[in-house]
Amino acid sequence: MTGAVLHAEEVMGTVVSFDVRPGHLTESAARAAIARACALLHDVDATFSTWKPASPINRFRRGEARIEDLPAEVYDVLELCALAGRMSGGWFDAWAMPGGFDPTGLVKGWAAARALGVLRAAGAAAAVVNAGGDVAVHGRPAPDRPWAIAVTNPADTSQVVCIVDVEASIATSGTYERGEHVLDPHTGAAASVVASATVVGPDLALADALATAIVAGGIELLATLQPTAYAGLIIEHDGAIRATPGFPVQVTDVSRG
Image 1: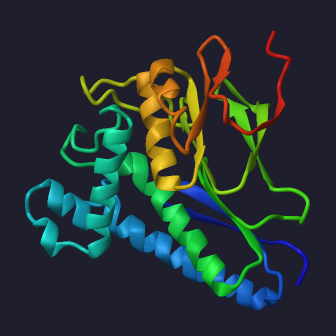
Image 2: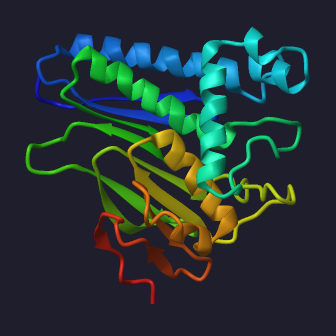
């Protein structure tokens, strides 16, 4: 099959969109793979949601369960959170959230990457999973071009700031639909030093966490990405755009004034 198979799933407090290029798969096989990917996302939500009182992560937060009593993936996420904390110089700190350990700033990207893995394992030629701005990609939609992902203006989401060529993953965090949802881990207060941050790199979970950290930590933290496998772009509250040298911008918006 040569056409795209599309799907949108409400899960994890957002809409996760799928764009699958089946290649040799039939449409029914592609849709079955998407269904398995969606089931995985719902399982992740059931495990990690801080809005579900009986979720394993909430039982852990309340001290009702030890880490060894929880599903194995909780420990995997815990280790990723620790790594993200080190990479961000402490600006991502899942242990400093109100109510205790909260991996929300990382787990959506982690889940999207796992969902993409289901599609890849099924044999899809190419695919995109977009979990509310946390985007994992596989393959290319055409042999001569990578997936192109838009970054929009947080003050006006109808305005595209730039188009980014993505080969692995891209995550954006900021004051979009939910307002100032990023917290400064040092104070516990809402923080948006920049309006939005976008990070590209090989691991979507870490890109997600780093984007969240940069919104709170600002341009100084963006600069620390330069010697790593990750690259970033920020949109400041006055509309100014800054990016690290490795950020793969294809088209920039020059109408900001």
